Length: 169
Image 1 (cartoon, one colour):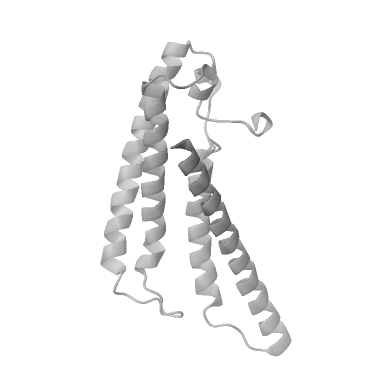
Image 2: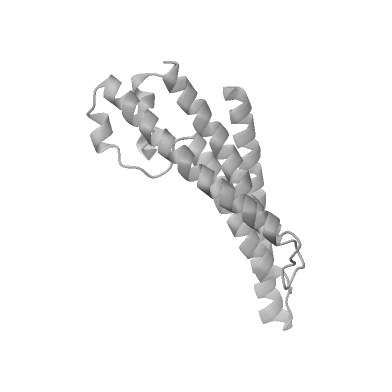
């Protein structure tokens, strides 16, 4: 399962780079066209905004997988291994609940707005909310995988601290 998640996150990184490159091309191209040729790309602002949303959610998937999300670990590092395990389980249970709420809300918004079209580009508005659905499903799999490993005792003590500092990488 770990190889599948690593492969999936590699694919997500490629998609995130594509989103970033698309944003740069659209915004830079629009700036050059406006100042150099007194014209512009109509869909540039809307498409770059949508790419930013997708980039944010895709980056959050990778950050969750690599344990690079924000957190305060001062207390957890001082706990015993058993207490660390308990706190980890509580933490991931709460994260799964919050993720469920995000997934449910994104799913409902995606369905509600699928038939609507964006003003400039004419995209299905549901695609905008699909980023939350992709994140929600991906995060659920990652969280459940990590939680299962902890409950089965397949983790080292240092892995029970779910936040990694940049120096530790």
